[in-house]
Image 1 (cartoon, rainbow, N blue to C red):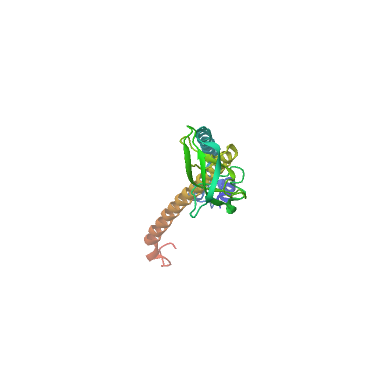
Image 2: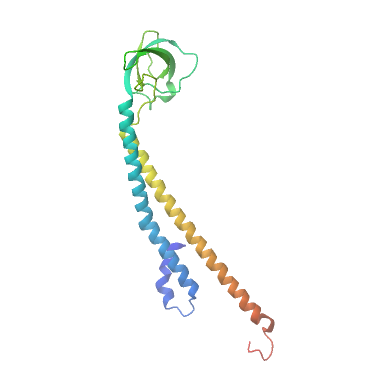
Length: 205
């Protein structure tokens, strides 16, 4: 609809039956199309760049605050853990985790015991597993990696561009709807003025 209206601007300029509202609608469509082709991608790129910058700071902070350490399995756990601990298989084997009670050392050397989850197949008592902890030695989620941050930033940029384009099209439709309503109102007023005399002899109709 927008593209057809834009392409009709040149044709309607010299069309004797073209109404002023037709030209106005075409110009509204041209402005909307320009915004969707130029402004929306620019906003998407800017949003993606800002998101990526923020996520990269988060990645650096998480890697500074979280550490890989070795834990020793004590026994199988009866409950579940909030954290996915195994750094090597946290994504590919997320559905095959096992919750265990394990012992490990905090960065300050304090002994810690808690329930963690692991994708390792070696979970017998005494087995060693790798887990993530925060700077106080508490179990923590695996830190975000750079590639994941880039992916999230790209999706945010695409989403922002699509949202800007959608809002632009919605605004165009609203403006055209208002113009159409005003056109109908003018037609109703004109008909109300000439309608009662339509077809009568001597009225010029």
